Length: 344
Image 1 (cartoon, rainbow, N blue to C red):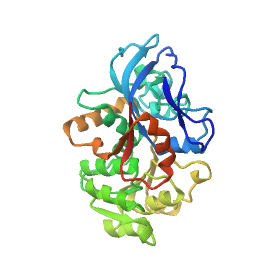
Image 2 (image 1 turned 135 degrees about the horizontal axis):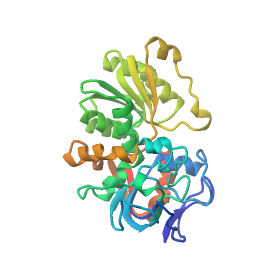
Image 3 (image 1 turned 90 degrees about the vertical axis):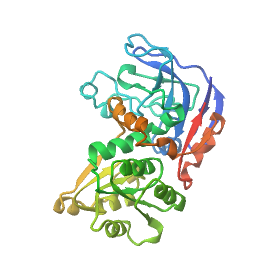
C-alpha cells in the first residue's frame, strides 16, 4: 500500500510502498478516505514528541472499516467511521467510565504506531474507539473534526462550561483555535480571537468573532483582551501552545474565569510561569484538555447535522496523499487560516 514515511526527524517525508497492516484482535483496519494535517504531527516529525522511526504520521482520519479483528462486536466491514486521536484500551477503569482520552494504556495512530497518511491504518479497541459517521457527514468534513475540532468542542463544553452571552478568548487561530471560534459562536458566546497572522484573524472574523487582537501589534495580549471584554473573558483557551500564550490566556480572565490548555506544550516549554497569585486570589480554574472520547461524539455530530456547526467551513485546502509530506513540513510556517485535509 502507499504511505507517507519519514526515517529521520526533520527530513522531508516521502510517499513509499509499505506492507499492509495486520488486523489485531479487538481492532480493525480502516481504509482511509481522508486525513487531516495537524501541528501535532509536525511536533512528532521534528522530534519534539519522539516516535519510532521510520514512521508514518497522521491521526485525524475518517474512512471505511476494511477488516475486523477477532472479538469485535459492534462493527462490520464497510461501516463509515472516524476515531478520536486518543484510543483507549477498553478495559481499564478510565475506559469503563467513558474517559478513554486519559487511558494509561492508550494508543494513538501516528504516534504510538503508524498513522493515517496511508491507504490503510490499524485501530485498536474498536468497540471503545470507533465513531459511526452519519451519511450526511462526508469524509473530508469528518477528518476535519480530527483532534482539533473535537478537542475544542470538549474543551469549551466540558471544561470551559461556556454559556450563551459569555466572553470567550481564543489564543491562537490555527485548527484548534478556529474550531473554538466557530463552536463558541454556535454556543452563543462573544468571541475575541488573538493571533499574529492577519489571515487567521480575518478567518476568525468571518466565522463570527466579535473582536480580534493582533498579538504582534499590542504590548500585552492579556490587557488587550481585558479591554475588549470589559474586564476579562469568562473562558479563555490557549489553542496554540507556548509559554507566552498560556500565560496570556490565564491573565486574560475575569475573576472566577476558566482557562483551558488545549495547545501542546512540550519539552522545556511544558512548564510556563503561570501567575498562580491570580489563580488563587481570583479563584481561577485551570484545565487541561486531551481530546474527546468516542462516547461524546454523538452530541457534536448532531450539531453538525443540524447545521449549527459547520466544520467543513474550516477546511482551507484539500490535497492528495502525494502532497501530504510537504504540507506537514510546512506546518511551521504561518497558516492560511484553514485546515489542510488529505483526500485519498
